[in-house]
Length: 78
Image (tube, rainbow, N blue to C red):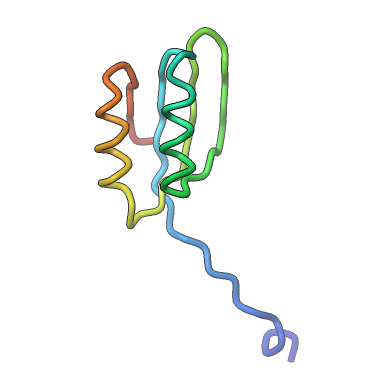
């Protein structure tokens, strides 16, 4: 009975990536993350920043292209 009245919650399938970049690139990287509705899983910010993000599977190609366009940002799969 409980399962019948509980609404279903849909969440996108995420692909995890590690990003490393200079702190001065933070604004551009965060703009891409927000634009493509990525999820920040882990964040370390110092002189060099490290982010672990979850990218919706249907937007992986777009995010990879935009991140690789930022030449000083290193991207790798988790």
